[in-house]
Length: 288
Ligand SMILES: [Zn+2]
Image (cartoon, rainbow, N blue to C red; front, side):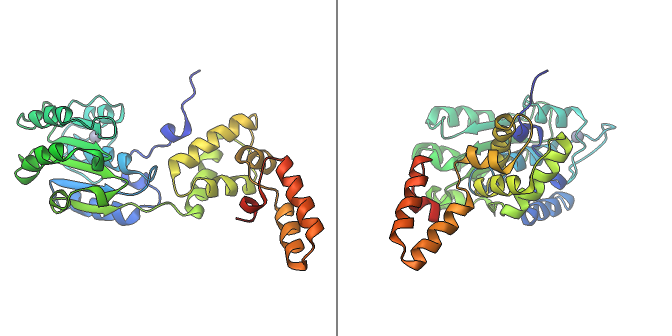
């Protein structure tokens, strides 16, 4: 039996499954329902907050045929038609994802833009998704600008970046921009709890709290850490195991250290620091 990592298994397949980005989901949903579509979208935000996921859902919304093959543009893609299933499995010919962090060259962008003059092969729309778009060279940006200025009606751009300040103003001004927020620890915690219930993995709530905090706003990181923790804990998530895995510190050390510092008890401070050092941790990072 092959094991599908949680981050992939629980990647949202429609807008209603998206967690923690309701402001973006609502705006896109309204635009799709009223068919007031922009030709270029820019999604900004740190890693693992849903930029690629939203792009794929948007591509499905634009191309969904509905279960009966009669559907049109929709805010609720059916998930079962050829377009939806092909986009989900990464083999829809009219949806292209390009990672500018690894395809910085003008050549790749030029090749992609050459494709822009051809109508979609099977879909209503061609969707070009360029991730980490700030990594493109200036020449590549200039090549893209021409198409961004006068895009054919069947072409949609989805640009994504962790660093919008490095995207030229000429490109920014042609995009409808959405900022995806880092996920709040409570949001991550809630989602992890649901996922583990579905997976039938027993978990201590304090263990999940630690994982949610360690993810630092990224749902993808939260799910990857949870995968690791499940392996580490042989199928269950205990606070002690997760703490060990994350290298985080037993809170009793923190209290002892703070207490000793407050009392000016140098001997205990040294002893506690030494005990932490033996665990491979520093007193400074413990207090953090
Ligand atoms: Zn569909």
